[in-house]
Length: 309
Image 1: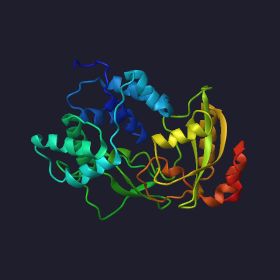
Image 2: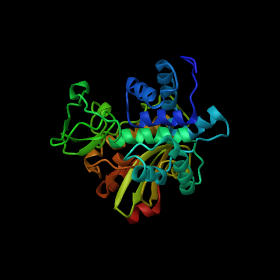
Image 3: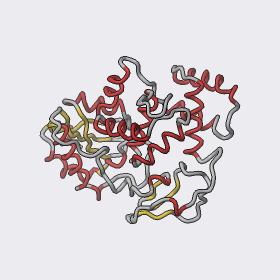
């Protein structure tokens, strides 16, 4: 592919969305993209432009992908596939003639057919994240650290630049972050809206409130669409490891709902549920149940179940 050609595969679009979810800067994302896909020569400017476009479509990402590729759809890696690779394949780099066996095993697990190249790239990325393989000592002075964060003592820094090291924030939250994310700050304390709050966007969206009985917590959130169907779609796309009940929602526009959600999160930070990073999206938005009566008046539609919790 010639230098500067603006062409991304579906897998690469999902990769760019992941860099937005992780709040990487454009420079960090471009460098990580080039390391992950060394065979692809795409200009950094095109990578940045595509990230900006994705950030504006973050709530309708699947629709965005379909608009780029028609009816074809990239099969996102499942939790079972990743778990198999971590437990069985990353401790030592497999020989190239093993990729076929790995791909066949993954197909048994997920019923999804993956190319050998896709398996090789995923394994390479997992080795970097887990700090195995060709990782090396990092130079701490090369990475900025947010003033509210400190690296925890008694840990080695020899697992490479994409391993998640241990930090603690000024409020005592213990978190794990890759070095390129140390400058961002504590994800538990923040409630920042991914990609920035959209301006003058009048498409339908809502702020919802769900209750998770298993842990006796609530979670406010934002999603595009209309009514309870939009909320169900959100959790089908980005599931949480709990059953949940919808107890309230407020229907408005993309801009209004985004601003509303940000206000709710900023004003309930002291009720944050999780002090440590979790393995699912949206964990920073979970709140202790005592905030429920404070939140309910903020919603236009409050279901009967809300008053029985």
